[in-house]
Length: 183
Image (cartoon, rainbow, N blue to C red; front, side, top):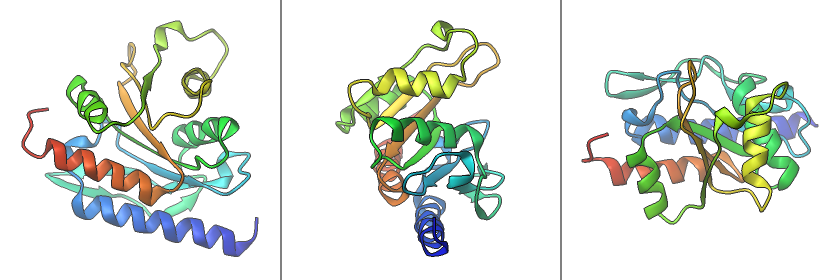
């Protein structure tokens, strides 16, 4: 990939992170933190996927990106987007947010295509995100993939899209819906 392509990915991701930091409801950030990633076209490895170093965390009632945007910053979310790209190469971005039944319900109300997987059914010897995301993408990549967690694993919702600004805008639509809701 050219340096120009890498710079475009970083700029677009910076724009998305800026939107989230400015307007997202901080209650959507999971305990483990949040990340937004964006892959280069034809990405093959974690090093081809940019994300926020140190993740995005909740600081009081604010959304706070901890580090700069860099390639190779997120293994977990990179695997989500790389797996989705195997099914649809246009889906190059993903973000994770906090899970609750209320949030899943709001995403469904917003007419997002929502699918889930059960970590308890994961076959031995596979990576959870590779298996879980693939199991949800067999009939096309949905807008949202969630799992209700497992022992020692936080439940999580992941939003997917063609670019990080689209993913951020979808998170902001959800954020507006939950503004006054108890989560």
